[in-house]
Image (cartoon, rainbow, N blue to C red; front, side, top):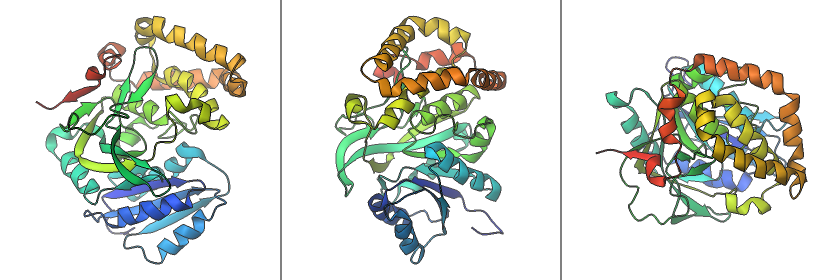
Amino acid sequence: MSARQPHTVLVSIVTHNESRDVERLLPSLFAQSFRDFAIVAVDNASEDGTRSTFAAFEKVTPVPLTVVPSRENLGYTGGHNLAIARAVEAGNPWVLVLNSDVVLAPDYLERLLAEAGRPEHARVGAFTGKILRAEGADLAPTDVIDTVGIRMTANGRHFDIGAGLPDDGRYDAAAEIFGVSGCIALYRTAALLDVRIETGFFDNDFFLYREDVDLAWRLRGRGWSARCVPAARAWHRRRNLPERRGEMSTAANLHSVKNRFLLRINNAGREHIRATFPGTFARDLVVVAACFTVERTSLPALRWLSANRDRLLAKRAAIAGARLVSDRALLPWFTSSPEGARRADA
């Protein structure tokens, strides 16, 4: 990074045994039409040659590339928090957070930043493009939508808007959304600083899974919005889906259970709880019952929540104390109607 002038964007990548994906991702970054960015890659104790892959790219990279090796797995949250802290220190105004299993169209950054630079979007804290599905080890592009933003439901669930639908033009209009998926997310560094809590920009208590939803909710609570720019296109290989829960790793399922409750502990105020209680309570009973029966490997999630109760409630109080937007103002985003998940431009 230049000591005289910071790059416009810091690209944050977190890896754990993903050498082959890195071989696809980095060339798509090097091919970006927008060039004023640097890359920080945090490798979480990979054992498959990922670091050797990065070392090979360091010899030919056309943009600054810094690899931060970690001896332990810091998770999605810990890895990205390290890189975001570097962006803050360097004065980078934007952070592009990426999974390793993605590829970007050459104009992805250019199109997002053009939209982000418009004066009327000064309070937009997060941007995403139209993210389509990629398939297989080669991340082959498809015409199936992966996500055009996060939508929230009244029973404590969240989904990716458009997931699994054909890209038939229905989401071609730019729109305000509740939040953006962390697989490919452009965040305003000032917004991340504004919502940083004791456990990080992304909450390190999440480790992985649902952490992007928590960040979206905290951004909303501080008056920041999110936006989808469908003209910016990228592809993502989606590994974890609700219908594939039985195929997900034990660790992913455990964090999913823990973070379902942690998400509301952090963000749901009394008015939100009252308004959504019937739906959330019914589903909570199903989740807890599953932990005691068919998915006992997730039972430690409930024990962790109990053991950390006092600390989590103190964190909740700190988040609530910093809120600028009421539960009542945010409740319209929590709907079972997919049509209520986007507010498209006129």
